[in-house]
View (cartoon, helix red, strand yellow):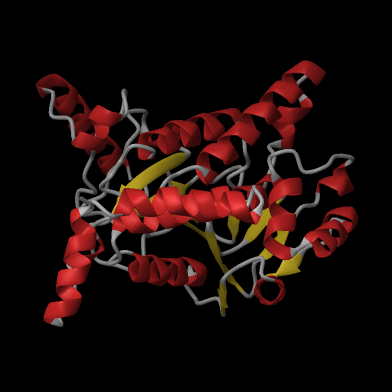
Length: 332
């Protein structure tokens, strides 16, 4: 682990010295691209990566590995176009503290205008936990004003995740409680292990969901059921979650503890070959249409459809159909 830290620091230093910044780093000030250097463990002490055999990983933050709580991994090879948001705050079970939230915001901001990314998977590298919710130790030190300001920032972060233009998938392999479930709800799609535990438990702490949960849960599972879950602070496992529509897919946990991640990656691979502009416009049409009446929604659909008509991808789709071959979409 010490060897990895030194090599990564040396790589950072050399990159800054010669200006060897990746396109991703140019889009996000203060970020550089690092390679995995042939090792399998996350520098912050997380569990090994699984599910694919790529040889390069993008470590965005220039801080020492011990200070990285959220990072980004860009897959390559046949999975090029899939990015993974890695939550790796080991000691605090990915609790939503100041540093975690700040790094997540920076990372999400870098993704907003990245046309090379077609799907984003949010996953945890902390065994048995997706995100444990609020950092209660930090929260206890905040006065009323600070607490309100922090939760407002947390709410805006979840909105930024929800507004990412490409599809997002949350892989829930463990506990997703309070703000952790709100983070998953901000994603378009969710997968879970049967053993995962999910719940908006804020009422058991004298609070209510404050990072979008009171609005997104009813949209996911229906009004009456969302009220029941929030009023009681009840937790549900992956099987119950898929039955009620809280997650899209659920599966038995595996010995590595990453079954939901593998399912999320499988889902991302199904999305990856589709025309990226069409997928983004479909997401925009559905998300915006859900907030208005059906007539206005039809107008939104028409607007999004009009933006797809002049694309090369649409022409490629038609040509591939006529020529009876798989289409090759470039996002143009």
